[in-house]
Image (cartoon, rainbow, N blue to C red; front, side, top):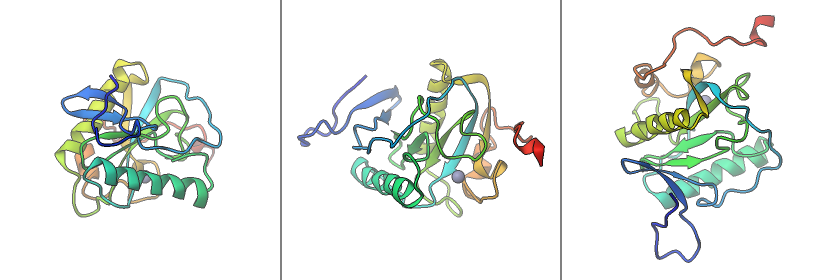
Length: 197
Ligand SMILES: [Zn+2]
């Protein structure tokens, strides 16, 4: 369902999909994302779902989350030279999901697994403090929705970024939380590239 929540804005600024329970997926249009330089179509369903943190600013309401999203997209596209913002989705401490590359495009988030998994990134640094319940609930709802729509395989495996890469991501305070979630998997995913080493 599309709707408008910020009625004082003259732009069509707040298009979203309502996941229910007060959780929305705000579209790229809603946060005025730049167009990707190019994209690769994602071949669903995803076998994996990865949890990240952005290691950047926290945001607690729509407009500051939009500012943060734009900064991340500029950084990924202009400094790192990527085609688009890296993550499939991002989540704010406002308890809403923001569309990154979305369901249809391959992301740039988890080396070796971008074509077989989606990623949601919690906006903020969660080394010492966990994200709030609203944002945790939002990501769980996103995953459930992805399964219901056939984007994510019902047998998917959930990982933190650090499970497959040399990184502290998604942070010491967030990592133990996702380990309690359904489908969290302690064994490393199979990866044909890694078998070569
Ligand atoms: Zn990460």
